Each structure stands twice: as structure tokens, then as C-alpha cells.
Image (cartoon, rainbow, N blue to C red; front, side, top):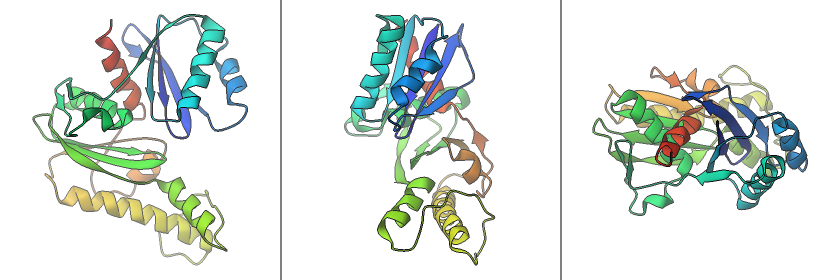
Length: 244
């Protein structure tokens, strides 16, 4: 069994891979002080994996906490940490220094192109919004990064006197209440960015969305979408194939 770990800016997501099949994903917020104990509890009945694969864009100390839990529960286990490369699984990295491309973005790109083999957009709707384009030959043409929904709301709350942090969902519309206005403003900002970029590139490209806010954003886009909740874990499973 392979244990696949995706350490994001806010959450740890994990799944087991057995005989090429990835199980249902589970997640924990890793910024809580109780994270270490929560993770030990969550994994106490998980069979010892043969390999642990890690994709991490989180802080180094969070990754170390996770490794500590692995060693406490299962002892010495082979750990493979994914990294962005210049080319893999038919995708060519456009960065001058390939390792500078966020590994979560890279894994999402290789998983998407491996599955669909055509020009496509990969949009990750998490703490940050990342949006990357691959042409039909597998060349990564570049991407953009923006603050995600929660980060936008947090910025408003932290830098204004009277705007509290609201997380409740509302209808996307002109609003007559502050919380509804913030919901619409942040969502319009993100969907406007995505729809604007889509209009500048080939219309036959498919649009793949992942991340915690994928469902909220997908409903308001002008382009048909494919939602892949576990895209980074899919890419991580591919990456690990090189070491088996």
C-alpha cells in the first residue's frame, strides 16, 4: 500500500493507493495546535504503508510534524517527496528553473495531461488560486496566481475597520448586506479572472478544476468544467511510479 499525502497551505489531504486504485480522500487542517494528536488518532488504524509519497507546499515544520507521526506509528518507512521537473509524463515545464514551479501545480498538470492528452486548463481553487495552461503537445505555456476566496475575505477583515470575516455562502448578486456583498465581490473577482483568461485562449481546451473551493467557483464559470477533487494525489501517484 502507498500512502499519498498532499500538504497544502491550510490542510493535509491523504489517501491510500492499493493496486493502482486511490481510496477516498480524508483531510485535516494542519494549522491547529492539536494537529499532531489529531493525525495520530486518524492514522492509528491505518495499515503500515510500503511507501509514503509527499507533495508539500506547506511550511517545513508541518511536513516534519507529519514525518514524526509516520515514524511514531509505523517506524522506518520509505518516504518519497515529489519535486517539479523539467519534463515528465508528456508535460514540458515552462519555468526557466523547473523546480521553482509549485509541486502541487506540477502534479496537477501531469495528472491532467496524462488523463486527457489535449490542450487544457488546470485551476486549483485553494488558499491561492492557480491557473495553468497546457497546449495539445503537452507544453506548459505558463500560469497565473491569485488570492483564493478565503484569503481575499481574510485580507478585507484584517485591513479594514468594519468588515468582519464572513464564510457563509449566498447568492451571487448585488447585495444589500455587508456579508453578502463580500461574498459576491470576492467570487466575482475570481470568476472574472478565470473567465477573462479563458476567453483569450483556444475555446476547445478543457477546463479541470480542483481544490477546496472548486464547487463554489465552478458553478459560476462560462465554460464547461471537469471537477477533479484529488488531482494532486493523482499526480503524486504517477510521480511515485518512477521509484517502484
